[in-house]
Image 1: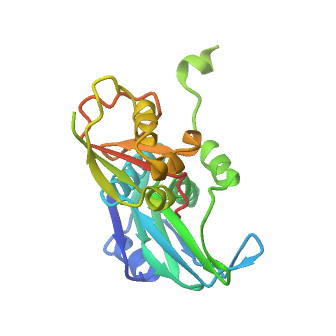
Image 2: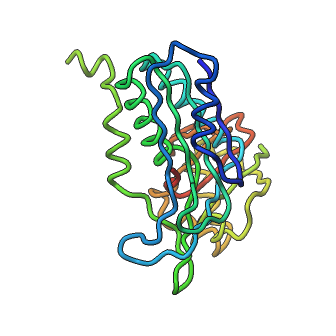
Image 3: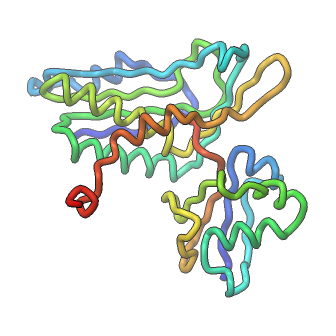
Length: 160
Length: 85
């Protein structure tokens, strides 16, 4: 499977990345493209900008581990994950996940799986800027719950 | 044992530096014990690690739990729960 993982300060072009994944191929029947965008509010408070900090080296490794996991779970024909770091303003792209498969169900599921794990396991931290100053974004229980639903029961537990 | 320790996000801000080389005594065997040892190094460390339950850790760029052994680790990182994506 073609897997592209990039961390970058610069913006990305979602359409170009989707085209790159399918170029010259006739076996792909479904491409799902997800783009996460910087919002102008969080929990009812205005956000003027956001800075994303990451752990270089580990971020790539952790994303690669989850792309490999996705590949074991679904018959994927391609996957691209691009995560930006640095300072962003509302309307800016933050993260891109593109998945390609023969059928849409696999592409949708894999894209959602990858996003749920990017939220909770990839070493990135958001610091928001608002009128009163800056604040680190707190992890959401809803994101943890979203990631947990992909956990398959361990065999010995399932047997009990 | 000498090991590189990295801090991210508000853990980094509280400690006041992104990384350092530390030499924990031989009695420090786990990530949790290392956190306790670090928290005794000064006010800034005590502040950073005042609620160790919320701090996440990684050894050599892979997530670990507090009871993980630090034997042979080259790089140990401490950070808050992740908020990427």
